[in-house]
Amino acid sequence: MSEEQTKKKGFFQRLKQGLSKTQESLVGRVDALIKRGTVGEAFFEELEEILYLADLGPKTTTAIIENIRDRTERGDTEEDVIAGLKEEIRLLLQEEPAPLDIEGHKPYIVMVTGVNGVGKTTTIGKLGAHFREAGKSVLFVAADTFRAAAIEQLVAWGERVECDVIKQKQGADPAAVAYDGVTAAVARKVDVALIDTAGRLHTKDNLMEELKKIRR
Ligand SMILES: Nc1nc2c(ncn2[C@@H]2O[C@H](COP(=O)(O)OP(=O)(O)OP(=O)(O)O)[C@@H](O)[C@H]2O)c(=O)[nH]1
Ligand SMILES: [Mg+2]
Image 1: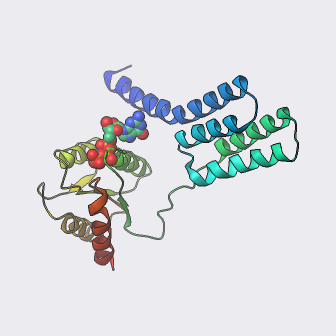
Image 2: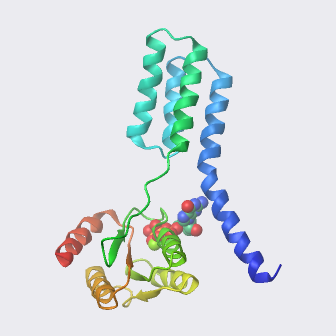
Image 3: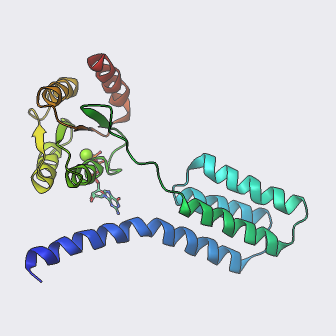
């Protein structure tokens, strides 16, 4: 195997490992909880914590807990309650996330926002790679003009997955960069434009408002 192939395999293996981590930790922790205790208030509390930590979100977590509580209250045996819980989680892991449907919008514009360090820029890189592999033209827009080296980070991703990057200098107005990016995306007739933003809560609303205005 060439060095390039080894590197490539390593990347996808790491990606796969990263993705399966959520499932392993969720299934593993629920399994440990079931083996350890009886179904009671402490059980529900710990289950809730596990589901939250696995990023299931409040809606799904509450739905599962309610369902299990209902089973307990209507007098199901502990065995049935646990079987029910296992079934809930099995169904959950089976669900396919809805694919990003980019057809019908050209360019399809995604602005990625979130708090600091949650993986916005990495997600843009991976989405870029995904769309490039599907034969789409992709443009990255470096509207995180705040954090040091944020632009360079996106440029590095751009080189890696072969996407052009629209950028200005660090400290530039993020809305202006986004505007440039959208204009370029339209002019170049690209399929997808992915806009990176700075992870700052207090500026995020402003930036989003400004972006809404720009797109109108
Ligand atoms: N384990 C794991 N690490 C990740 C994942 N996505 C990103 N990271 C790492 O988390 C760190 C931050 O990722 P970024 O993509 O820079 O996050 P960001 O939201 O753009 O950060 P800011 O721009 O500083 O707000 C990096 O070290 C990434 O390698 C992921 O899915 N799993
Ligand atoms: Mg970033």
